[in-house]
Length: 455
Image (cartoon, rainbow, N blue to C red; front, side, top):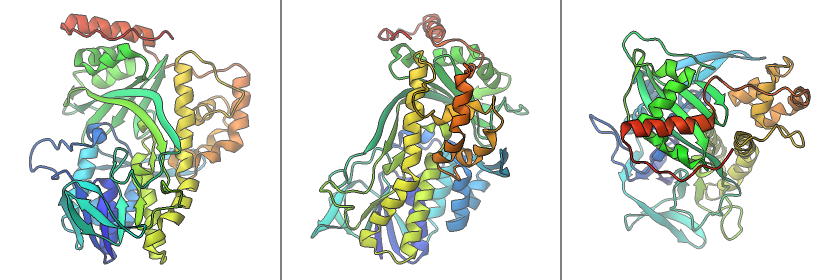
């Protein structure tokens, strides 16, 4: 079978290598030339490439199953396997510490050795169609015939927009972020962690995270309400560093005696959650000959580091359907049914949770008139130990968010007593605005943001 893939990122490379390993003729089309021999890989068009990433256990397991050569290359490049204890489940594989650059370099260089997989540099202008069926791509104006086209173009891909129905769930979640990458100085130990993947602190009106990567690299992430215009100026290094000094946990991580920055501050922009199924614009269950995977189906905010994991889980299911003899022309239809059951819940979980976080950042109380969002159920485990054992499947992504339903009444009872989760030590959001403004004045930066909304 001839297969054309739009995109040679993690989704395109993983599905392409697996299909080529099954004897198919595969070409993955991407505008990027691949990692340079030396220096920074800019990866144009992939906004999140240099931003903080977490790699859950599903990623390593999928590579071990389908592409062990890429897993070996990733480990050789420094990826660090980690484990942790999950309530009710014991010690489990937590994933790998790694930067996205390190991960994708391992996949891209290994892909060059996969028989039957070609990576073609170019722009996918659109698809070839005949009698209502997709039969290839148009790449830089030239046809590339294929029996199956896989859209692995990510959240910003537009090549098949004329064929696919728009997203049915989600949209902007009201959060935006900036981050910066650091590296521990020789001999320095990492700072505090709230779990093996990250350190997270919820403060009054915003959130901060540290994602630990490989070989002493880590990323500091500041998450704010999108409508707080004054905090857009966190994109300036002086403001970013001033806030890091003001938040005790971040001050520990970014102490110059512990770590040094290795990038500028990286603006991440507004965050989105979105689910987009396989249904075609004309109402059919799918467009024959086309299937979309990865972020082109399910996008979640990076707070829980689920993006690569959900992508690889999708691809394993697509491979299972094809291995079972499903007609490639209509494989998108049963794949869509699986995604609605297994991927849509994660997007819906983030829509509910992130939206409620933003509401509470603005001063709202816990809303007991509807189901509690997952983050509040998890937080209530600090007060009711009966909740903890039920959280393991959710935290490890071995069970969907509905696994928290049995303990939601226990969490509700906790909040009905008047208890609320406390804030981590650090300035309130209005104080952060003052810290940012003072840092910019001291640094001579002429920044004049619009007034922030009151909180």
